[in-house]
Length: 316
Image 1 (spheres, rainbow, N blue to C red):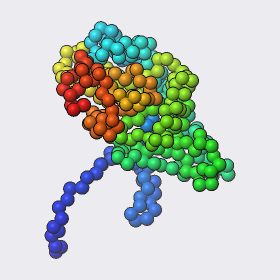
Image 2 (image 1 turned 180 degrees about the horizontal axis):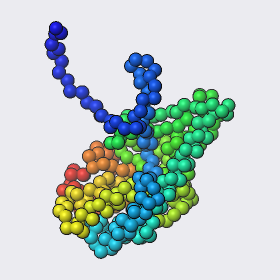
Image 3 (image 1 turned 45 degrees about the horizontal axis):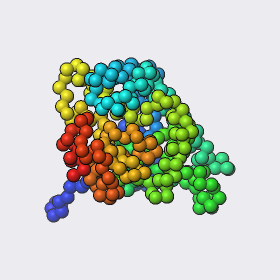
Image 4 (image 1 turned 90 degrees about the horizontal axis):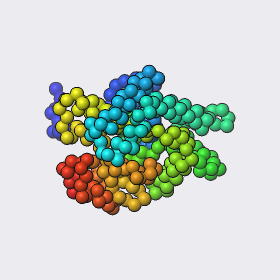
């Protein structure tokens, strides 16, 4: 019979869902199994391929065209300026197909770029350099949050130009196949952030990748509009939708990194994409204090499109 222990502890941790991306690769020794798992590259966002197929993308085309009509009719819970910004993009009848096509192209570039940069002159393969986010190791889907690059030797780093030593994250932005998606507190360091912003704005003004089509929806906008369609559909059908649900399609606040001005969830359009820093509502107070942010007058004085309780809790 064993003795009773006198330590009582509830461990903190995160359980990841079990699916095909958590397959066992091999076992190094008794306490070191190696598994296969996905990485969500930090600070970037590439077009979605969640439609799965051209047919699936066409169904999104139809839903988004319908959403454009609802916005025009005033049935969607979206502010006037943002509705006018999105409606022409949705009304094309190809918003879903464009996103899917761009997503496939971004994926193809990522594969070819990784193959090229991970191949040594000798033909062998380099390992990966992975730098994780200290504050949050995993996202809600169990993906490792990290910057990823070829693992060059110290000698190679001495001779390679800066562009050839960049992360895959940076490569996606530089070529226009990703927009920046920096979420507090996972902000690049003081040397890396200006480089990322410069690459993003250069790709945008140069109309590279996703920026070549004026009807492009950024991936985070695409996901939000999918949620807006679902909410508006419920409203049109006469189903009960409370205030919290009505505005749940856009949750993040936006900081203009040029001025440190904090904007509401629907007030980011005047901030160029490369200069946007995103905040979850739970992080707004901490970010205001740590980054010395200045709330925009519209956020302080009130917006008819944002519940007053939400405004107060965000900046108090």
